[in-house]
Length: 274
Ligand SMILES: NC(=O)c1ccc[n+]([C@@H]2O[C@H](COP(=O)([O-])OP(=O)(O)OC[C@H]3O[C@@H](n4cnc5c(N)ncnc54)[C@H](OP(=O)(O)O)[C@@H]3O)[C@@H](O)[C@H]2O)c1
Image (cartoon, rainbow, N blue to C red):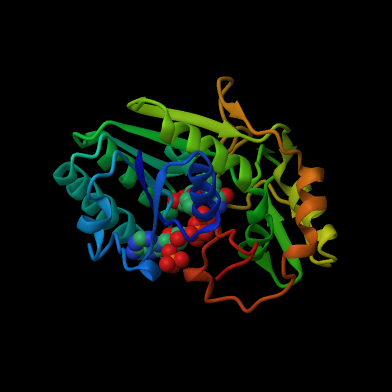
């Protein structure tokens, strides 16, 4: 089966492409660097020729409110139009658990818009709602920092490893379309502030993490269960401590940040902002 992975060079995309190739599918890892741009449309018609499934694991280069909305709306419209023309039978998109509860956030309004376009289109679809990636914990601290203080709410949190996200997304791509949402999450529940504190400690990052009920998440107020999946979620296998042991040596501990308005708080390719 021919499968096109939009965002095939990203954190999830590279892992997903590898898993699908292991199973002997013909996989196109599509991204601007490989000449396929879902925003301008460049290379899309050629990439989608003969494809049965398109998996969208792309992400916007800027998370400023209007830029990210424009990215997900334009990209999703282009993909769905080209998929209809190419006769693609299944559109799979990766989104976030609780997206519908986070409309105060510009980033999540963009994800809501993406999902709305998918649901309204004629292409059969599956939306995979994943919890936050372990790889994103440091980026989350960075965008919640003021000097040496990181303020985060003491809410439930059930993040997962990027490898497990890729496995579950591959499974969705190889299954019949649900025309609905499947939720995936990590095997353990934590408190958001506590896990970020543990992650920073593992990086020898001295910033102080403070539990603050008024702290926002990606610009939105959140409550106890905003970020956790429902009872039917499929859970990944990788526990936080196992991931930490495997990955701590590979993740850089410092970086230069862009202006706060353009930071990508969910960016996780390196555990920091781009
Ligand atoms: N971070 C989290 O905790 C979390 C949790 C749940 C769901 N998600 C979702 O997971 C998805 C993937 O996240 P990620 O961290 O894997 O992203 P990522 O590592 O930032 O990768 C983004 C990918 O998008 C590609 N891309 C950017 N602009 C493009 C364009 N115009 N056309 C085609 N491809 C383009 C990039 O290509 P280049 O390499 O060429 O730039 C790259 O391959 C996102 O949609 C996000 O909402 C994230």
